[in-house]
Amino acid sequence: MNGQKRSDIQTGAEVDIVLKQDQRTGKLTRGRVKDILTKSPSHPHGIKVRLQDGQVGRVKHILK
Image (cartoon, rainbow, N blue to C red):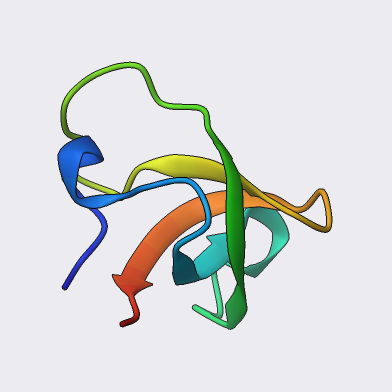
């Protein structure tokens, strides 16, 4: 599942995100969602989240 819809993402979900500094390379970082930062119901580049370790980025994949 991609991370473009806010309703698909819950706190505690395991996700792959792209950090701001990795946007050019597309390098993914895996972690668990602590906070959902995007307020709108969807975003074409992915919903912005904060992981439990404090890193912030846009969700590219939601893992089960």
